[in-house]
Image 1 (cartoon, helix red, strand yellow):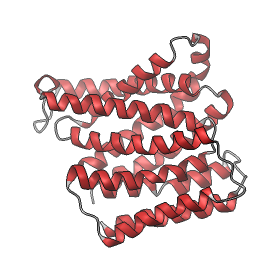
Image 2 (spheres, helix red, strand yellow):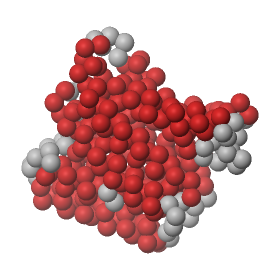
Image 3 (cartoon, helix red, strand yellow):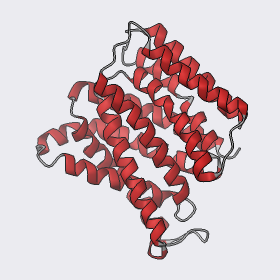
Image 4 (cartoon, rainbow, N blue to C red):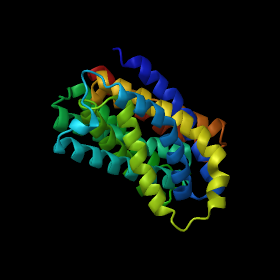
Length: 287
């Protein structure tokens, strides 16, 4: 249970990150530009830790120069997954309420459970299966709510972000067997930064500079949350760590209603998030 302490830190930091990003994107409507500034800030924040880890390698980890070709394929795949997650999550956050994206994002519990079984040989108890079905029920509750408006593109991006995040976390867990957490953290941000730069070749520097203050605040919290999550995954099973972290989505919903004034469809949003949180609890208990 040593992973619960860093997991709590991840939940707190991710809540701050989501709130700051949603507030910035709802006013700027430039998700790709925000992605670049955010990821560059995260890259700069994570760089010192990565350098220290490389110069003082853990005895249980391999230096980058000694990685096998298969490990480098994992690095590339993880960078691609994080890039896809970054693009999808910020594009969905620019058009959908935080309370909606958080509930749609709970579908990553299903992906995490499947990846845990396929990649790490983890097994699912009948209680965990019941929890996964409960998460599916939360999606149905939210989608059928008459007062909650969905954009097709935003919904697809939110669902894609959930899948990409699950894949990125699973690949990171594999990489933690060969690399230290600060290095894995840096590589994830590096991949998203490259993608952000490619998407903003024609973006004026002035637009990027205007997004810098809000992106920096979110990046500090996001970097800390990501690092805490890596520490939790290093010692905890993926099929349990992700559900516990996902239980924070009910915090996202409440924060979106209270802080961001997302008042449309409050009851179905709260109901769907509560059902999803119950599913996360069942998955955790079953593990």
